[in-house]
Image 1 (tube, rainbow, N blue to C red):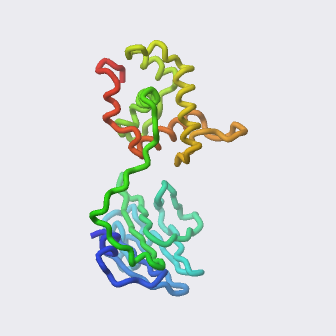
Image 2: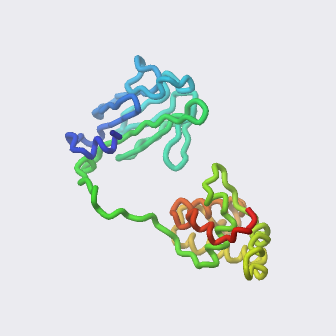
Length: 256
């Protein structure tokens, strides 16, 4: 049972600030108190929460949570990185960061591709009293409107993303135009046309609150055009606006 599941199954309400922490090896519940420190790592005799007990890349004392100024502060004390939501990384030299009330998963990097999950939950007023909604209708992801032509252009640019490759990169506008030429009527879609259409999409979605940066600042500063295309395709795939079946828009003879 995960930390979220155990909290949702009617456990006794926790006072605000109570820290719940869980790993594969077990879980703990710690009341907030000044100067209290909770440690996690590989050596179960030196820490409060054991993490990665069979992985020598995990430090014996890999991290700690200290309670001060009415907040739990997370610090990495191990040799390997700790990864937080939204790709945020913590190194041994990184300043402690405050934990927000609610749920925070973190991952301790281990051997090879292994990552060890530590689930953290800080109770807040009313948080533990949330009503389970097991049979409520699922909220769909926010999907972004695209015309048929825009979708086709984006599928061509982002084939690697729709194949869920580990490190996808977009095609150039010239490559996209060359490959579109294989489709019926594709000869009219020049590099300039493709670039113009995709720029329109980027500006429209940026005005609509797209979660990643897809346009440069007014002064022209910001990431490269290729990185902006990467952000666009990443956001469209993550939101399921673009999905693998969209690859069916391409003929069997379309070059990969």
